[in-house]
Length: 387
Ligand SMILES: *[C@@H]1O[C@H](CO)[C@@H](O)[C@H](O)[C@H]1NC(C)=O
Image (tube, rainbow, N blue to C red; front, side, top):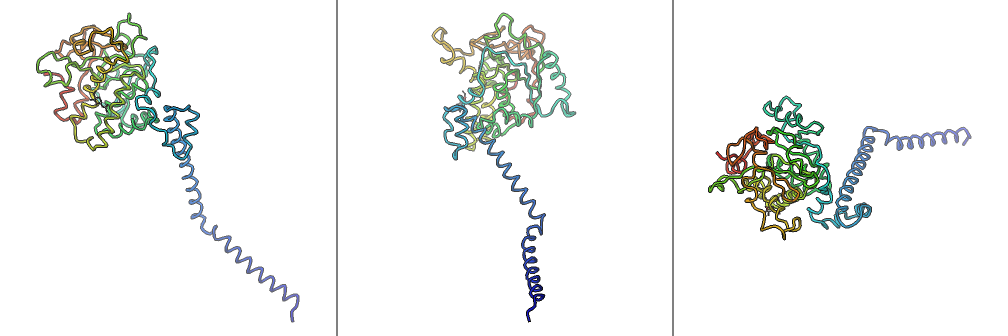
């Protein structure tokens, strides 16, 4: 006999079973919250960082495109398209560098002093012998921002300054020796920010404001360089790679100077070329020449003889070492001031250099830091003093 009581019991039983089944199924995801939650969080995190990556990439692409034909707005639009690589390379590296770091000869020399070393002056490991040198720069240049850049900081700084020029960063990264990176860094920082670069083993003898006679207007030049070597002897080639060699342990420049643009483009292209041919770590002699004073000197002479920069019709022949040998006062070539050998190499007792107390002695180079570096003996001829 089916009573309403029985029906009610069956219904309750079925409902109970259904409820249990349901709660089993729905509770199963909550069963292991520790499994589920991290998965959710991870996937959110990864998509957020993916987004950041994408944003960063599109910003980089945008600024690269900005150096190409379209406007910045067009570039942004382009960069969000499927193939962001399309349209790259419409401008040469030199044009991209010029766009990023325009040169204004009328501008002031930025009040920066840049130096690089393994250790920060605030560390105990900073060598005592460099302390006096370092302080001399600060003391003679009140109001200047004076930075000693360590390797780690250099990497971050360059990543920031050259974010839109990945080839330049790749070349810096590919250089196999610290000395090559140090060479490259000085050109890169001066191109981007301007100011004075000087090696850590140099001491300032006179403030930079006194390096060039006051009668020469400051808006008529954008770079100051000095002579490293002027070996007036027949066997000079046994010792130096160039008859006149300009030094790159001290340089003052306005940002964007065409000489810096050319040297940065040259080292970038040369490095990537050698890397791709697998010739980067073997050819030591060659690699020292391709970032150091020999290249620096070649690039400067190339600039002095560039018909698109200078009016060659009024000059007699090309500008050569003969224009600079044994000079005793500053010489102006276009927008470049060339100082005599005494200015950045006083007291070397040769090649006509005056002593440290000479009126034209501005920076003393102690040749200390360079000797720690892993040079091969053959490469020393480009940096050593004639015995
Ligand atoms: C870099 O400059 C040197 C010296 O002028 C030259 O021999 C070399 O071919 C240049 N390299 C590139 C890639 O332009």
